[in-house]
Length: 265
Image (cartoon, rainbow, N blue to C red; front, side):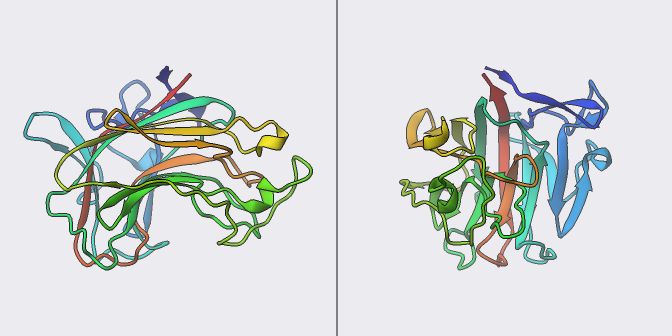
């Protein structure tokens, strides 16, 4: 597999956001990141610099000399769609086989018992139309002291009788999935590989979607079915960072990424 890239807004955008990778691509002079969302503000790709946006997004050097990108959410942050500091990638194409590698750790001072501590560190998002709910299709995050993975696909699409078709769905109308969670600890790195064929179609209309998730090299999740939302206003994208969907955090949430890298077959 090779590093995924697209041509967008006049430049080649690589999906290589590893900790050792500068925020500004030296080959193009522009950021491969589409935008940053932090403290209820957006920073677009043409505004991003190698300095980051302290203290929310910055490069840090670990004790072993390697670099990581640190994302931080603070209790004092302004709210926009709950509390979050996230990087949004440029859109990606459907009907291709991808692997998204993540190597991350939670800060050693992470409070797992925080009442509003649940959140998300990676997601696939579309652009919903009126009458469609905007949950992530695929997502990975932390609930309590467990790492979870989720796929949310609307029942109205799964049960469609014609394709393509216009679809609506409320916030709770998703096909049920029941994936196991994994206990994690703060202060150590975990390696996750998410392998999938990106497909919005249900199986009865030729859908070939699947997802295999590996945690530290061992198979964790297997899913067969669609993993993009259909009938959207625009293409899907990947986001990573920290989205504290449980509510306002009562202490700082800091998460570190040594690897955030998409490959295509």
